[in-house]
Amino acid sequence: MRSTSAPRIRFSLTIAAAFLLAGCDPVVNVAGANFPSWLFCAICGVVLTAVIRPLFVMTRLENYLWPLPIVYSSLTILLGCIVWLVFFNRI
Image (tube, rainbow, N blue to C red; front, top):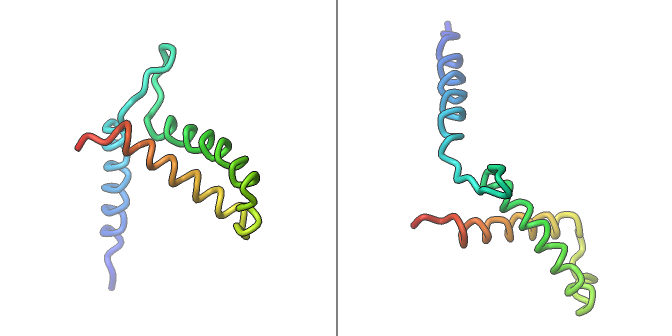
């Protein structure tokens, strides 16, 4: 017979870790409002992707990028991670 308390304990520890680790996120102050750094990086990733897309169209490179939603969402994530590494990496 299996114990049902082990999954409950694991779930409780996961929820507690999520709440405790949320305070470790760097915060960006924009006009007096505090935003988490991941939100700043996500917005930067979207903006940089919107800036890069016309370059793909002008160089006719977009014709070779066949699943466009996957390509542009991956590019957004990549650029957001690069922004995080450049501005928020504490190594």
